Image 1 (cartoon, one colour):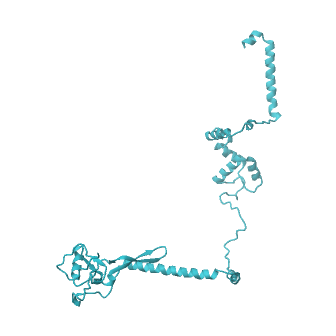
Image 2 (cartoon, one colour):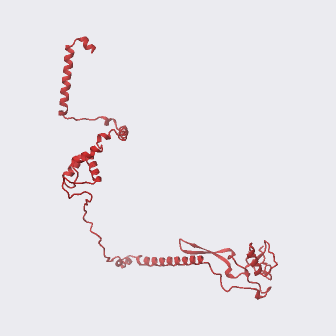
Image 3 (cartoon, rainbow, N blue to C red):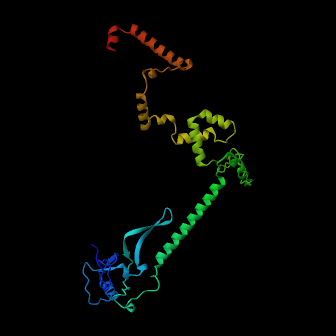
Length: 306
């Protein structure tokens, strides 16, 4: 059963009266005093069931809709409330004509002013909405300009693509130049100077492939340091490949690679020129002949003892 209005002379929600929305009395003392002064009941003590209906509030003090701003669309979404509510600080000022004289009722001529923050937010929402509407209008115009439904429409709009736009030439990049800025190539070949990074590059290049280094240097396409300079750098920094074989990382890598070898990979053919082995064989043959002579000349016990 809806609560009845507590204002004198009001029949809101009574059997013979209209069905209206009602509101509770404020809980704070200041608001309660203003409400009691507004309904002209100074000695009235409201209870938890005491209510004041909407007929005693000005229309702009009653909230019947709630709105929220959608940042994605830039629109303000509004929906109707199931139960009306009051704005903060609202006070009943309208009294019924049947129970009270009209001069006891007081009404404000204008709505309460909104705070600067709310006004700024409302203005920003309106600007965003206007920008979205302008963007949608521009999209519709551009879409209608380029959209085609039939082949004849495409033929009619080909002139839109024939735009004679001037191109701005910044630079001609058809030719590639090699610029050597660090080395001083204007000096004589006996006073040539190279930067440190270029010397490191030349040393690594010579260490990887001496033949390729010699071919490139002899072609005179790129000026490279001499062989003695590069070899001196390699020896001073221990860049000999033979030293890398004693490195722990290299040995670990080789041991892992050996596990993936197949049986046929263990067979190695070693080809050595005869001139490198002739002297070795001659010396071994001489030693073998000396041993045979000693075996036949020396006594047998001495041979066994030896």
